[in-house]
Length: 173
Image 1 (cartoon, rainbow, N blue to C red):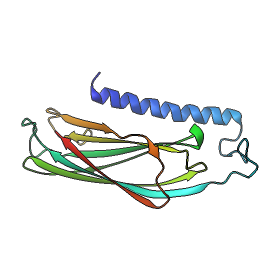
Image 2 (tube, one colour; image 1 turned 120 degrees about the vertical axis):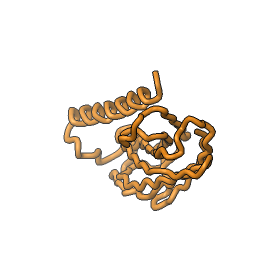
Image 3 (cartoon, helix red, strand yellow; image 1 turned 90 degrees about the vertical axis):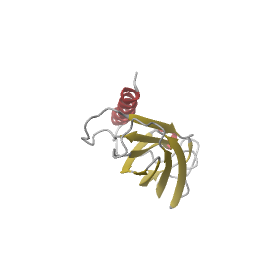
């Protein structure tokens, strides 16, 4: 299975998970109504809007000589948040074009977010980073040669409210 097929399959699984969670929630009652009390706690459930941004920068080294120097560099960041002990999911994506000069390139993607969270100390964020030359969907022809670099970050907790999380990556294409 090639990387493109794997990525499409991954997105389909994520979408199906979100849809299934909505169906289960709707079957249990009003899908917009959150429980008013957590099991084992006497206080009412409160939500907080957590905002912030991820700023992801790549330093890119080009070693593949078959990639035309004029091709666009596509840089994409995906944030997958599992919140409220698995009952809520957020998927955020942002993409940007990178720059290239000779055998070096650079790209920065900023992804701002605002999430309604009730259990932020337990909520988990996973980031995925993708570089592609040329990026899919740009209409550049020919589509080949093509090169992609995918990196997966370790799961981590939601950053502090209002935080800017800077991430710097190195990649070789």
